[in-house]
Every structure is written in C-alpha cells, then in structure tokens.
Amino acid sequence: MNERELIALLKKKDREAFKIIVETWQDMVYNTALGLLQNAEDAEDTAQEVFMQVFDSITTFKEESKFSTWLYRITVSKSLDLIRKKKRKKRFAFVQSLYGKNDELINDPPDFFHPGVKMENKERASFLFKAIEKLPANQKTAFILNKTEGLSYGEIGEIMKLSSSAVDALLQRAKKNLQTNLKEYYELQTT
Amino acid sequence: MQENINKKIEDALNSLDGMEHASAKPFFFTRLEARMQKERNTWEKISSFFARPAIAFAGICLVIMINAAVIFSSQTKHNNVIGQNDETATVDEYSQVSSNFFEFVNTQP
Image (cartoon, rainbow over all chains, first blue to last red; front, top):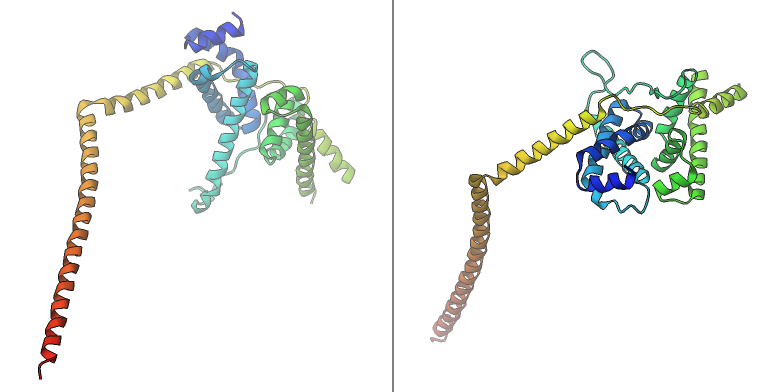
C-alpha cells in the first residue's frame, strides 16, 4: 500500500491504515520532538498528540505538500507550544518555594543526553543542547531539523515555509548565538 | 587558553555529527490508542451527562428564567421612569399653584 492509499483509508478512519502510519513515522516524530523539548516524557506525550491531531484533521490535509512535511509542521508546532506553556508556568511560579521539603531544588532540570549521540560526544552534546535551549524558536527549529533530522535547507524551508536562503541565514545566526552561549559557559567553567 | 575554549566550542558544535535517530519506546501505538480511547470516553461522558432529559430540561428552564428576569427588570426600570415623569409633572403643577397662591396673598393690601 502506498502513502496515497494509506491517507485515503485514514480519511475513512481506517484503524489499520492509522496503525501503519504511526509505526512508519513514530520515530521521526519522536526524534524531532525530543530534539526540541530535550525531555523524553514530554517528547512521548507530544508525539502522541501529533498523531491524535493527524487522526482528527486528516481530512484537512490537501496533499499539496508531502505527508512528512505536514507531519513535521505539526510536530514542531506542538513542541514549541509546550515550550511556551512551560515558560509561562515558570514566569508565574514566583510565589512558589524554590526548595522542597528535603531542601532539594524543585525546578532543577537535569542535563539532557540525547540517546542517539555517540558515547564519546555525549558530554559535549549536553553543553550544546543547553545552548540550543536559549535560541529563539525559529533558529532552534532550523538547527534541530538540520542536525538531528539531517534535513536539507530546501526540506527545512518547506516545513517552515521559508526559502532556502532564509533557512541558511537562520542557521548562520543560530550558529553564531550558539558560539556565544557556549563561550560564556566554557569561560565560566575555567574561572 | 582562548584557543582551548575555541576548540571546545567547535567540538561542541560538531558533537551531533553522525548521531542516530532516537526511537520511541516499544508499544507506542498501544499507548496512543489507549489515550485516544480514554479521551473519547471522557467526551462521551460529558456529552451524555448533558443529554440526559432531566439535565437538558433544567438547562432550558434556567435559560428561560434568566431571560425572564432580564425582561422583567428592564420593564420595571421603564415603569419607574414613567412614574417619575408623573411625579415631576405633579410637582410642577403644585409649584405653579403655590406660586399663584403666594402671589394672590401678596397682592392683598
């Protein structure tokens, strides 16, 4: 069964077609969400929500772009929504105590180690992910899609509705900002 | 030392090269289906609650009562305004009579 037939069946809410689509694309969706959210639980929740939306709104998919492009868009959108929601929560948490009952820090996210990174690069990659977290949403998206998904500038442009040159400019700015963030971090370490 | 930091930065930027895709945990579809079923059940519970005849009837009565209260209170305000106008007219009439009376008294030698 090709992708077109699967989508046609999914529009009729066929369970088997939905299962095949989920099993085909779940790793791609999960990996993208994981790169953006840097948390396995959040990535799993978001991946589930992506497929729930696919199931609910497949009739709105006009097949003008590739199915994977549409899937990436939903994944990026849901991941960025969750990041914004968490930031809003943090902003209003000033009435909350910083420490718990046993004097442990309540909001102390652990360093993120991406499971797909090579062992010898894990620690360096965790510093990089800390720096990625500070990037603006569009630079973060372009960087993650390029580095963790291996997408070309053209493919990223289709997902983000930008030209290849705009994606190139985004990635240049992202790299510059990452260098600045990493420099601050490494200089702090040496002092 | 600056060179050392620059090298570290470059190494960090290249640390994602050759990385593999992370995979979703096993039985992802099973968990997804369970969640979709749970949400469907929640919506069905909510809509079936409001579809119960007693609840639907109570809801309609509440809406009618609120509308009636709004209509009644606006009518009452309208009547009060008319009443006030009558009073004002009465006051005017008496004040005219009064002034006439005093004028009548004052003209007496």
